[in-house]
Image (cartoon, rainbow, N blue to C red; front, side, top):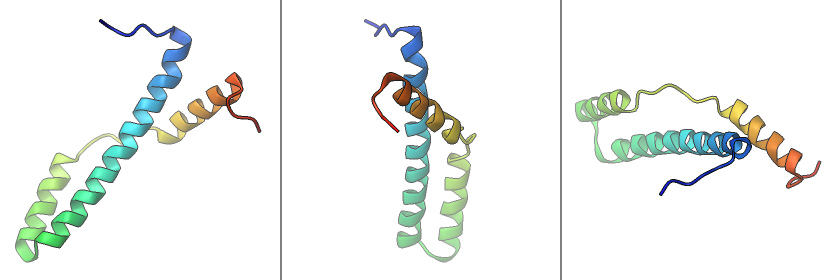
Length: 82
């Protein structure tokens, strides 16, 4: 059973999901680097960081644009007042 969302509500929800996923991915990569640095050293450290860099290759998201879209929606619906 698929969740039905009105077209006007889908855009802010999609922006919120994309923004959260993009920021969460960056936190995961940063935490992974810290763990690798704590458990490996020397040549093994360079090898693991290289592998992480290859695995974490991605297109950065438009988090600023998504944040503005989310903020505009909140202001427009009256959930946040200026």
